[in-house]
Image (cartoon, rainbow, N blue to C red; front, side, top):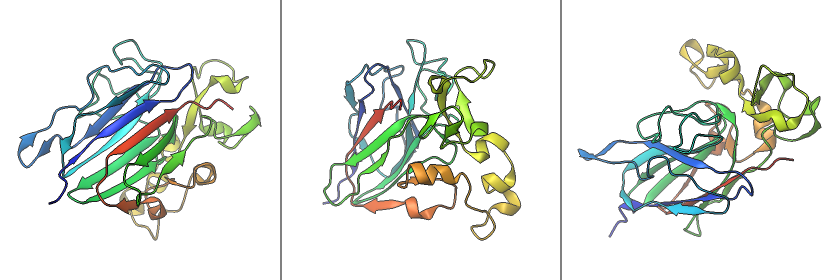
Length: 238
């Protein structure tokens, strides 16, 4: 008999930061409305976790971490969606876990197509499913502000109006698509073709080989049988 539900366990492995997990995905399954499986404004203190109730498949969606928010999960510096619940909403330039679940089958990946902010490890419960990890500092690695794996032009700063002096000011790394917004970098319109859209933001692939680095990076797609999934958020600083 096919398995027809999936659950997600969300863990905050950041030693000193609160995480507000967010999920956005299919709002309806077979004509039935699906509610947000994460309580609105849920905050995970360091080393705490939350497991969703099982919800039906087929379902597809995205999960990410909000950081530096108000207590109710709004006004986030990273991953904001404009509300306490991100159900039916979206965000920009964050590390994303993307999944499509169907009875007996799962497609899943990590995406840095828009940018990188928070470390994520994805651990499916089924042994035959690959564990995915992208766990690097927000600047992707490097020794000082003048030598980061993320180009200086693409660094996402906590306060862009202040002079850049320390890696502690870095919240993440923007993709070229997020930074420039052109069709060429975003694989849109005339560039929406795998033969025309070039691989961009190569530093993401160097830092996180398991993740999508641009829209046609199909080497990052993973499949296995339907499985519950644990998603671990981390906040590596160096």
